[in-house]
Length: 200
Image 1 (cartoon, rainbow, N blue to C red):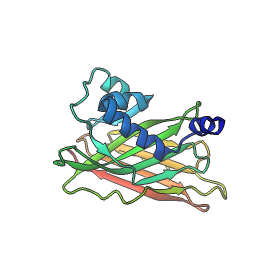
Image 2 (image 1 turned 45 degrees about the vertical axis):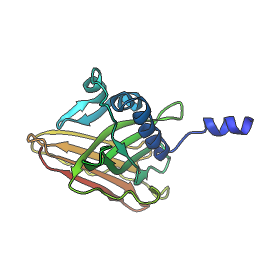
Image 3 (image 1 turned 90 degrees about the vertical axis):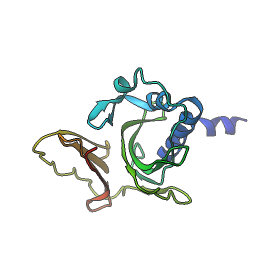
């Protein structure tokens, strides 16, 4: 019994957090789950950057929540931050797309998302049999990602405390967006995710 309690209290992975997020959306409502799993300053896109908690504050849950699956998870060396990505679909099977979500481990050992984005697709993207989890190297001396100066629009970025995982998003005035993530491989910050979303 004690072992079961300890296992239940163990910190979960970002993949586990994603699955719990999906389950909560199915059982308790899509936007209710988004609010519950988001940090206070979490960002999402509509299509410009908005503060998720404020944007979703009075939003009613749709009758049926989207379904989504983590297919890839890029995790910092210290295990405290992750970028998850995978496919989503509407329950009727008449809309498909992919998501990219940045997760941060909280002081209590749980996880909350700090940025959520994605796009629609003409055909569904396969999820694979199990998520592919890639951890940053814990060797060497991680570097920061070079800054990029955008001519206009909105920009946000972050890096894990151990500097082994970094990400950056940009929204142009027309609503088109980019998201990039980098993972430390022991020698350099290697690009692992590059989303390009056209204007709506």
